[in-house]
Image 1 (cartoon, rainbow over the protein chains, first blue to last red):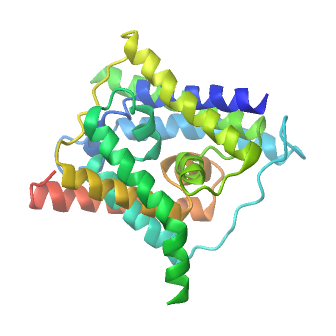
Image 2: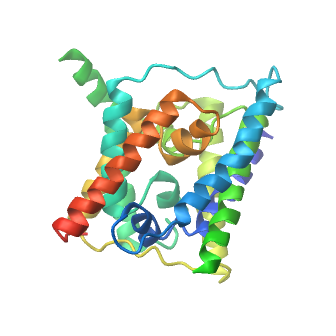
Length: 139
Length: 143
């Protein structure tokens, strides 16, 4: 059952990304490019997504567990170098190509070679991160 | 242009509803980089791994079906510059895993619970994205 819910929510997430225009990199870059013909669409997407999720957190706060499992642990509160440095690198890559992980996957079936190249590079970096993190911690 | 924000809002509500169901039913945070990253680095095992793979299957297949049946436009307008694509992919992969989240995990799920880490991460990646466009598009004309 959890597997089915995961597939369905993944599908709904992907459909939402597609319909909102977030799989179109010009929209994302148009939002980040604040100097020329600013495209506010991404703000509406984020606002629309935050609203139901804010309600969900309120419901979750009053429950001991989720319907089919435990609720996630309370989040770490620490704002550290990894969070800030990682977000800095992520934001730079996001701006360069106009893709973040969700839309890159949602558009994989129709994104052509460009989408596949981005995806391959992203997967390689994700696979290498644990080893890099260990090495960074040693130095 | 008037339709764009309506589509944005409707799509956004769908994204938020998906995140809400994933939290309240499966008890998980819907973060695209965490779900993909757990598969990419092999850290997700057993049932958690199956759950992540199912999520990814839906995420890839449903937009594909919508596009194939002409229900949605297929254009990503992604750059053809391979060096930019590789650099961007590496930065996004490494950055999201170091930060422990991306626009869905820190953005949608973090901002909606006013998480200090979500707020800090979102402020930094938005600022970095804006500066990147400023430098690489407006100054250097590369992207």
